[in-house]
Picture 1 (cartoon, protein in one colour):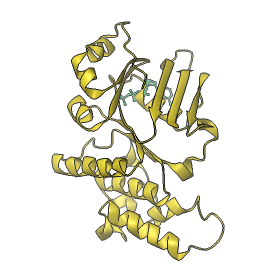
Picture 2 (tube, rainbow, N blue to C red; picture 1 turned 120 degrees about the vertical axis):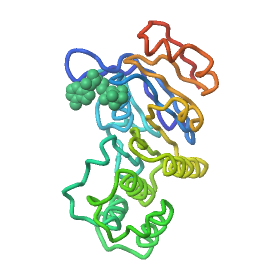
Picture 3 (cartoon, protein in one colour; picture 1 turned 30 degrees about the vertical axis):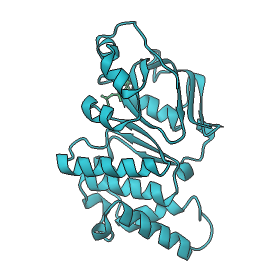
Length: 245
Ligand SMILES: Nc1ncnc2c1ncn2[C@@H]1O[C@H](COP(=O)(O)OP(=O)(O)OP(=O)(O)O)[C@@H](O)[C@H]1O
């Protein structure tokens, strides 16, 4: 089953489309790196994929359901671009934030031992045990990203959508962060990652999508590096290379 099916999607905030005629299939278990120049529509496409925006035309399906009807609390973990600025005002602790990941499973009723175990495992998994009682608003950007990922793990998400998660994160933490993403991906979680560093993303992703309003390339990282798709997208040329998986 395809994790993500984007079919001829066009979307604009106003009259002008910022995502135009994009079709993209991502199989379950893939690690998609989404690249493109500044303002090329990457965040918008990610939001369309996870159902935070609805297409003006075309369709998006996630795990064979319309993305806009998808219960994002349950199967999608979203780490937004401005994570460092989120939850500044929220007086909740790391543990409380991760517990929220269980709510889709336990909206009504008591927190069970299973829920508690799941929260503890998620916190350990991303290595933030020492921060469990700290306020989320007091953490660094990199630490907050880990909280978001722990929350996604607690919710047993099948898809992780990350928007430039390592901006402002030091090189060592960044390496550790990518190791974690690889481990999660190896365990079957589908990953969509926006990353501005082409070298990093072609090293880590199993496939690359290159966007500049339109989709300029979708295929293997090695092939992406060898073709001129990047230059085409950055130069705004009309040459579109599209390999469907
Ligand atoms: N909420 C919004 N309302 C109006 N215009 C928006 C909104 N969000 C984004 N845009 C515009 O849509 C275009 C695409 O933005 P988007 O954030 O999707 O691109 P991006 O590739 O993620 O950019 P960056 O790499 O700079 O984060 C930009 O011109 C942006 O100004």
